[in-house]
Image (tube, rainbow, N blue to C red; front, side, top):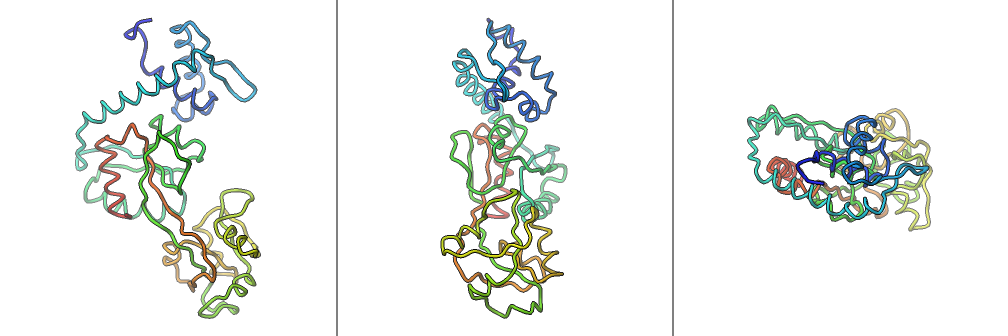
Amino acid sequence: MRLPSVDLNLFIVFDVVYEQGNLTRAARILNVTQPAVSNALKRLRAAFNDPLFVRTPHGVAPTPVADNISTSVKEALHLLNISLAEGDVFAPGLSNRTFTFSVNDLDEVKVIPKLMDKLGGLAPRVSIECFTVPRRDLESELTAGSLDFALDVPLFATRQLCRQQLSTEHYVCIVRPGHPAVGSKLTLDQYLDLEHIHVSGRRRGAGHVDRALDRLGRQRNIQLRMQNYMAGPQVVASTNLALTIPRSLAIMYDMKMLELPFNVEALDQFLYWHKSADKDQANIWMRGILLGLLG
């Protein structure tokens, strides 16, 4: 097999399929159809004279040949990305590039309005796309280039991703003005006597605040579990429920804000990007903008 006879895009498909072990997920990350992924693998199989992947009940598993070439393929793609990035000159005022972000609703409210205001003066034709990528898929989407940045809490350590801390969030409790059971301060017993809202995208499981209470051997009464931070204050405004949220969100609403009567670890927020984009001029520029706004 000679390199000029092989489409290099096939190795991008190989790398994502190898990481995901599933053709459907790989197609979603590559933004192509599953038949297109299957066709790419068919061409690679012919080039290597090996099946490369075999079907399993949960997707596909690599053959020994695929295992042997996987590291070399990943390193080669990384070097190609670096070479392309270092040759680019990014002119923000002229660029019509689209930057993609994985963010949750809290970070979207904190970051995106400030970012768009900043871009309006510096890079009016640059566009932003925000969506939520499951944490298990972040590394593979950043690797594939279908995602430029992720804003999230500290994640698992990996050599493929770079990160920079953007902010540190401290929690407070909010209730509606005139709440009949809350004065100017909260004791732990008063906090636990309240009925609470818990925000989480998961169906069950303890959150940041509840783990802090558990260390004290205490438990709060969760009356409402919901998945969106932004809807919480609206519920608080019309009920006697309490909501424990980051201070940066609490100050956006006309609510009574109280310090917590127990210690909750601050929540660090990080910006993540793939190491292959570390020297990309556009990526460097956007990181500088974000750190200037939030750092």
